Image 1 (cartoon, rainbow, N blue to C red):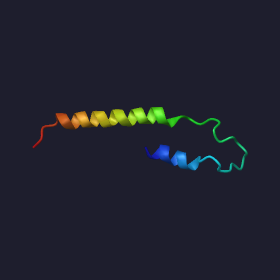
Image 2 (cartoon, helix red, strand yellow; image 1 turned 120 degrees about the horizontal axis):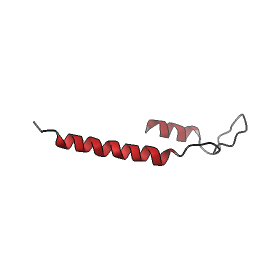
Image 3 (cartoon, rainbow, N blue to C red; image 1 turned 45 degrees about the vertical axis):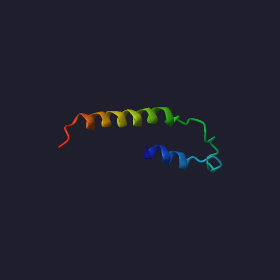
Image 4 (spheres, rainbow, N blue to C red; image 1 turned 180 degrees about the vertical axis):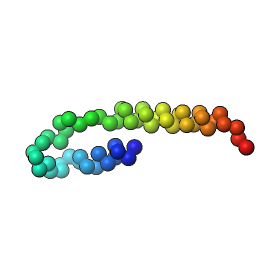
Length: 55
């Protein structure tokens, strides 16, 4: 998803934090949630399109 990629590139390790905050502290692991969501949406969309009659 777009949000995941945006957050990944914004929080590249080695980037400076003007407030001195540790970059890995408080991060949410996006991978399991968004990967499962994207796979389920893909499967459900595929199944829906398979059940529609082809004209």
